[in-house]
Amino acid sequence: MQSHRPTDSVSAREPVDLNVVLQVDPDEAQSWSDEEVASRWLTAFPGSLKHNDSQELAELRMLAITGNPERVAELRKRLGSLSWFMKALNEPIARMANREDGCTGRFWEGRFKCQALLDEQAVLSCMAA
Image 1 (tube, rainbow, N blue to C red):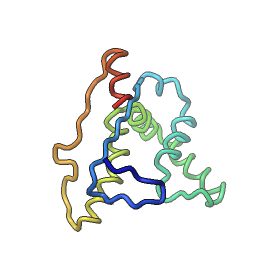
Image 2 (image 1 turned 90 degrees about the vertical axis):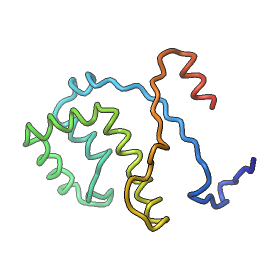
Image 3 (image 1 turned 180 degrees about the vertical axis):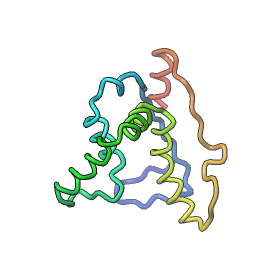
């Protein structure tokens, strides 16, 4: 097995294992205020909002979300969703790999596996892998 120093280049074709252990509590998002939902959404998905954009623009984006109760409800649901988390994690990786390979279409094609860790031993085994 070859090890890589931080300065080494790693090819996208080299196998990479990524184990993500998380606990999802969709009910927690229900306790958040509309402003908290908007803030968390814009932190996770800033879109065209950049860190150096004006505070005024950031406030307008917040108001656009909080002023739309249907949008707040949808974002609250998404922030508590494992499916949306996996989409946010996988999509940029897939886009980059497809761009590098010059192809389109479904990137993971059965390579992604999700497994429930039902007890402490399962969690420890996954984290040790």
